[in-house]
Every structure is written in structure tokens, then in C-alpha cells.
Image (tube, rainbow, N blue to C red):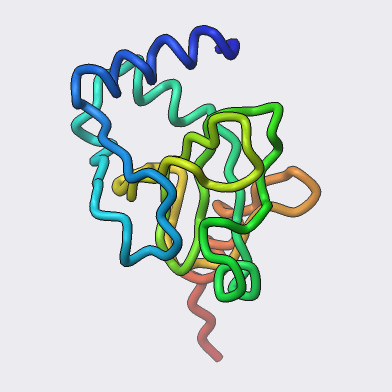
Length: 137
């Protein structure tokens, strides 16, 4: 999806109240808007699944919270993993998380697990197989 298509889909969801977001939260305690991925329309699901995922380090989160400059200001919408939670973010052209909603039930995000992407390749399935491997001697 191109930028204008994403904006159209998300702005429609904002206007209808399907997605509500907190403006300029500093920490996760200030985010009380929740998006349940499983209750969204198929076009919204598709749009969200295609968003870039940014993982905020603990150091970044502890220093500046959602005001950490971690986003590319040329893109507007992101999935941000921070403080053990997953968030849907609209940065409005800034490099920090300007509008934020907690999002749950994303099928491609496994909360509280380390990154499984190396050099742009996702190794999550291989790691799951290794984690479930039982060796008997």
C-alpha cells in the first residue's frame, strides 16, 4: 500500500472511532487507548500488518520514553515494540511517537521475545522449532 492509501484507511478508522490514540504520551502508563487487531476490518488488518516494526531499546525507553527519536520522519505509521508492549504509532512526520495506542493480538508480533530478525531475515519459525526440540540421551 502506498502512503496515501494508508492515510485514507487509518484516517477513516480515526474518524469513526475504530482506532483511538493518545497524543504525546511520555511513558506506557499514559497510554490508555487499546486496539484489538482481531476486531479490525480486513483492510485495516492488512494495512497494519505491512507497517514497519521498530524496537525501542530499554535504554531509549528509560531515557526519553515515547519522545525517543527512533522513527524516520519520512514515514508516518509504525508498529513500535517498547517496554515489553506493542504499540500502533502515528508520528505525524516527527521522529518520535506522537500518537500512540496499545495494540494486541498481532499475529506477527510475539511480545516479550527477543528479536528474531537478522539482516532483514525472520528466523522466528526456526527458533520456535529449536525451542520445542526435545533431545533424549
